[in-house]
Amino acid sequence: MNQLTVRFWILISIVAISGFSQGMLLPLIAIIFEQDGVSSSINGLHATGLYIGILLASPLMEAPLRKLGYKPIILIGGIMVVLSLLLFPVWKSFWFWFILRLLIGVGDHMLHFGTQTWITSFSPEDRRGRNISLYGLFFGIGFAAGPLMTRFLAINEAMPFLISGAISLVAWTMIFWIKNEFPAEDMETSNFLGTFKRFGRVWKYAWVAFLPPFGYGFLEASLNGNFPVYALRTGIDISAVSIILPAFAVGSIVFQLPLGMLSDKYGRRQILLLVMLSGFIAFAAAGMFQDSVIGLLICFFIAGMLVGSTFSLGISYMTDLLPKQLLPTGNLMCGIFFSLGSISGPFIGGLSIQFFENSFFFVISLMLFFIWLALLSFRPNGKLQKDMSMVKG
Image (cartoon, rainbow, N blue to C red):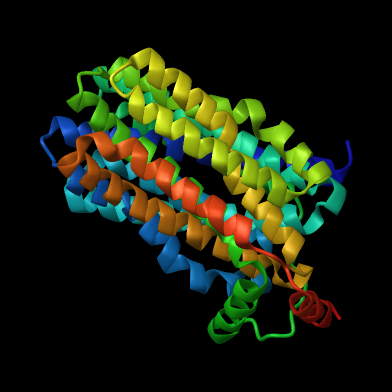
């Protein structure tokens, strides 16, 4: 096994453990707050702390990455996540937990930004979809296992946080085994102003590639942050929630790699059009079967198979559209749009549960339909291709 292969598998293993902690945190805190009598809209608003952290950190992250390299960014992000998870049992307070969520958001984003940009930078074009889908697959495996930790609430409220923190610490140490590297040089200065100039260029070339990460963030956060509350209010018990929620992630695991490989063969845009339209239909069906545990289980699994790969497909599509020098900025913007979706998802989902109970799944399906329309309308033109060749030159 060569050094490149070892690096790749270590990076996606770290991502899997990050997915595990994120998959645990959203439903776990949602259930704790619901049992404590916190309203669904406030509960959903609290879940945004993770993604506010991502948004606050994003403009400040590119310059340190270009100066320090990938490895230090991943190391710093990993230890922030570990320490924050271990601090949850210290003091049960709404605002203290919000701050910890925000810090986990910053740490997770550093970890994902470093690993994601590193993988996209060394992946050849004909294996890009496969490599990024494996990245998404391992994150999905971790995310699917996360909600199972809610079962430990029956034993001790602190136990899920402590177990997750310990597992994350073990994964974090693996990064010491690989050698540091630096991203490709760019003509703009590596500072705060240079980052914003690159944001404008990246948006011009690849705006449509950021909509699938937005949609996935909206979907993931609203399902994991709002669905436990919805389920408890409609008579579905916690044990059923711990089975239904992972069904989406398991569905995404089943088709993550095949969809990535199909996108290498038939094109990212074509596959994204297919999965977005299919996801719209799947969640519309979930809205019609929302009183049935079996119906929801099937709909979640099918939806996961279809739209569970949209984040990794969006990253691959962004990488296709951008020159290598702009990949760090493109990956940052994928993270920003993912966090915007993740912030709006739980809040809008919480409002729909509180005021329009039966509209929860239809709100999700409508959002997927709008992204499908945007993908359908996008056409790279000659001027864009010319601008890209100038940047590459």
